[in-house]
Amino acid sequence: MNSTLSHVYRTHPIHIQSSNLPDFRSLSYLPDSYTWTAKDDLLFSASASNSNASLPFIDLSRPHVATRVGHACTTWGAFQITNHGVPLRLLEDIELLTENLFRLPVHRKLKAARGDDTISGYGVAPIASFFNKQMWSEGFTVIGSPLNHFHKLWPGYHHKYCEIMKEYEEHMQKLAAKLMWLALGSLGVEENDIESAGMSSDFQGAEAAIQLNHYPLCPEPDRAMGLAAHTDSTLMTILYQNNTAGLQVFRDDVGWITVPPVPGSLVVNVGDLLHILTNGIFQSVLHRARVNHLRSRFSMAYLWGPPSEQMISPLPKLIDSLQSPHYPSLTWKQYLVTKATHFNQSLSFIRNYPSSDQIS
Ligand SMILES: O=C(O)CCC(=O)C(=O)O
Ligand SMILES: [Fe+2]
Image 1 (spheres, helix red, strand yellow):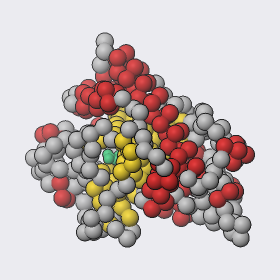
Image 2: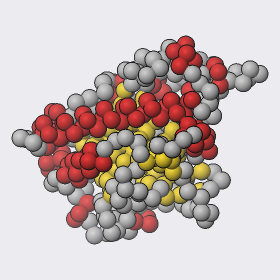
Image 3: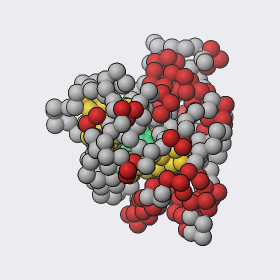
């Protein structure tokens, strides 16, 4: 993990008053600034699905798994996986780390608050600046080594937590590359297609961030929002959620559906960059997190993207010979700058732009 994300946030800082984070435990009512209506987010009141549709659940140890992964990326832009090779013990460790982090008193967490010039550290959801209302959640972003921040949070115990993070990241990176190949393989993409697009076929040099989220108990969950609807600006996101439901994904023809937590399983989201790379064949999925009044919820998202200077453009193999590509060639950094301005409209904004030079 290195500097692309940090760089973008340095040049386009998100101004958030971390010190405004409330001590959620002390609130017995929902303040007005946390009360959402359809005016605050068009999709807030979009209907919940009344079909019995559910997200594809894929056992990676079964045969023909690439076809199932490809189909899930095309239809939903998301799926759940089991037998993914990440040890259960490590998932339990990262969950405990996350719980221990957010259970610290606010003044301790603020010792590791995000600064003006970096997205790493403790604060509100990174997408908070796009909304007028506050989200019922707190987050901790890890880009690069968490050593400095962890030292401030847990002096004396930080090495152990850094080791867990490192091991988690290594497993996630391997899994992300494997999923990428299953997904692209289902479209007939081969190693030489990826290499001629200037990428390494083992996705060496990929960058990532780990986003830890906490959704505390909420006195009025129906009127609150844990994390508002968004797509991830990644190639792929791999998410582990604790045993409390809250994640929802959206499909125009279905509405919102809840992704039930299944012990030991992971949720995979197609991000905007994979949408671009496949010329829109794979859908980046709109998702959000709702809250509840019974149990705290924790989630750990591995946000995986390409190397910082890597140009991403629709793979020629996936472009119909009678068509031109739907998206221009651009780096992750350029896309993040667009996202910082156009948020959920970013893909439609850059669609059919001939060149990234004209994008702002
Ligand atoms: O908490 C969740 O289930 C979703 C988290 C998420 O979407 C994110 O961190 O980007
Ligand atoms: Fe997300």
